[in-house]
Length: 204
Length: 145
Image (tube, rainbow over all chains, first blue to last red; front, top):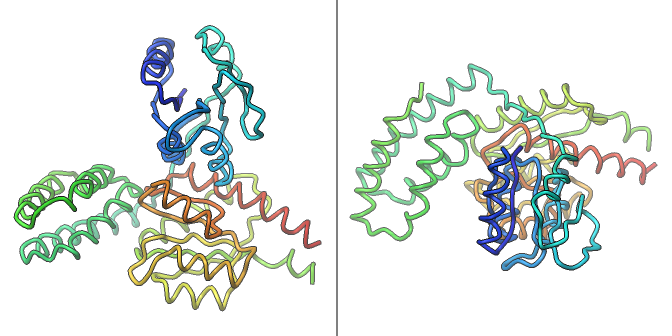
């Protein structure tokens, strides 16, 4: 069972992670409500534990935002106070006791994961598109046309993962994270490195 | 008039600059509609590859459900979203983006988006949106009828 644990107290989160993982659960920690919303929207979690008092975005607002966006998986509130807001599936009183948490966890089911269907021809056509994009990127890098270069990298980041080329998506994401801070000279080196890494990925 | 609303196909508009993304989305929408117990599953598809063609297709077809990429080559999806909602306030618009920052999500909700999908696409994300649309459309028909 995959759990998302949204809690700003790092020690509490570590303790929970330790206990849950030794009982066979997978846990991802989100340190505030903002990160919790972003993580939840990946739809990888069977259950979310949501602390109420968190920085950036509190647990109630995070839950309400997710519900507004149609998120229909269980969310458990954690608080020392009573929580009356509609939208939570359960309320856990803090401090948490692991035995009690485990008891509650038994009420929830693992949500079966669906597979995205990628027809063979579409995947092949997309693979050819990636090859073509890498070729274009090489030419753009050679002529230092960084705006166009960046646009294609952005497109690869968004689309490659959907077609089963997660490696390319991840490399593109990594490049994007620091791209804006680089000088033109650094961009040249970074672009070459990126293209080498992409070429090492299995695209066919 | 009310009967007409009930029997006609729902119209779905897919807006993304990359043809492969639209094909992938359409293929999986069809698959999910047929596999899951959704009430509303009669549909016809329309597609657009940029903001200007999306606006034209939207005005002509008045779709019920829109998947709208935020980053379009000739404009922002959020601006487009506002214009869609002006034309057809009950239209269910799902924003699609590679960037799931809270600002993006908040701006989308504030401009009238019903949902938000973070790329890459997964079947679970798409199904969650379809279920949400199903509930929404059901309510809409009940209020209308």
